[in-house]
Image 1 (cartoon, rainbow, N blue to C red):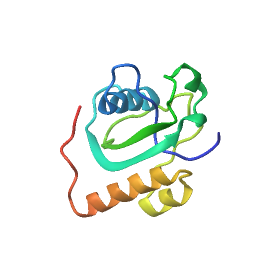
Image 2 (image 1 turned 90 degrees about the vertical axis):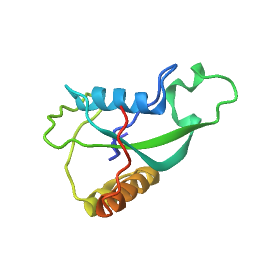
Image 3 (image 1 turned 60 degrees about the vertical axis):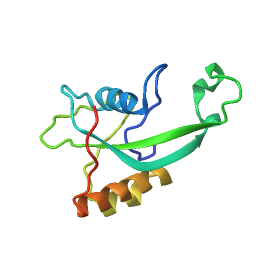
Image 4 (image 1 turned 180 degrees about the vertical axis):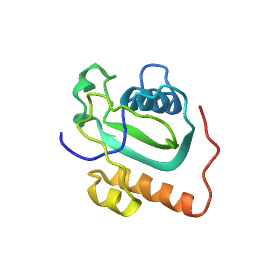
Length: 125
């Protein structure tokens, strides 16, 4: 789809949003070790019609909840998966300008405010 977005992905059967976030980060960033995962307040709903595997979902699924998390990649080596064509480390203002989805910009804005206020939530694993 050639857009800039945060690492993202859906949950598998039986996974909590936190478990899905840990798995997706590990898969998409090639993480060799666990990293702190911080739950954010930002949530969104995505129309189910945008997902290729919607046909395998229960009848009556019209929207999919999106949960946002932050991870600390300080001194962590990453290797992006084939799901991505590029990666950039950007400051908050530059990243907000290129992100495609409003929900990604909202989550990044929340994280920016939390970092300025030294108010990250307790990490989960």
